[in-house]
Length: 466
Image (cartoon, rainbow, N blue to C red; front, side, top):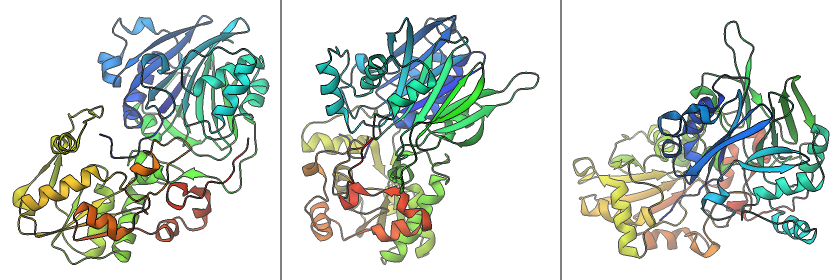
């Protein structure tokens, strides 16, 4: 049973690098946290695309770092890769990305991170013109629009991207012109991160890399260059690198703040900041707003560690590992019934009795969505001898589902929907519960605070038109 928000995928693109497929796979390993349902890589060679993808983790789809049949199955010096978690469309192989389509005597491969908010309207328009859909994912709509508009040149592709609206970061690979053309683009609101890097090699020309997060660049020893800007399309081919503005960046932007709170790897650089340091600051702010008399701070692993470090430092009490997470329990474990859900939580987390026994404990986590895990952990801590169990959450109450590419449960499944903080505390059987306020969170970003989406907390969903 999934109790955390989940994101909609990770993407990587590589140009001008020998064994591009293997490097793309390495990049996907670094982005595995963004999607565990499927993985795939497409390469370009001699005017043709070569694809390998499958269901499951990157290590399952690409054992040993390459396709099961060997690296020769994906030849070429240009590649794109994708790890998926489905927020639109089902979890099955036909929806695994990159998607490939043919039009105008050529092919294109696409990897997409985000949700197209205009998907229902776009799908209806395309269907009225005779489009036949092969998948249930909104990413396929981009391919249909490219074909419908016969978009082949970068300028024509840019005009199609301007029709999409929020929310997307994407990579595309065309096999022509040789040795292939890599395109990366980000919507004008900048919802999802997308970065550009380069890999310099002695005696060889520079290889270019794009990825959802900088941790993928680090994995293949590429250097971070810059963010791909909102409303920008980057084209990398035999002529070099150039940029096209398919739309002006919106003012303000609408960057997903959950990237900093939860999604992004702590060691990445996201929207110009390192998530680990942001999360520490969230913990410090939380301690100022929601202090509590306690003996130890215990993070809920792994997502709560950074915030717990900041909280413990600010409140000046010890940080202890009172919970140990089993990293070998798959995320696909979905348990029916309350007893089975509690068993699933115990499979993932175990109490260190000697650490928590007789203690007043502050549990710290980055977010609270359904509350299933937290309720079970609180009960287990009391059984292990904890005197008090307090919970502190390093973001505001999540009361609203997301339309922009985060898989929140239905509104009624959100524990904070239509409940007060005290009602949630009582439901989870806690001694106290405190959240970081929205104002306290935004204050951490200073003058950039207006450029972040807070819709899942505030319910404010502006009308975002393409």
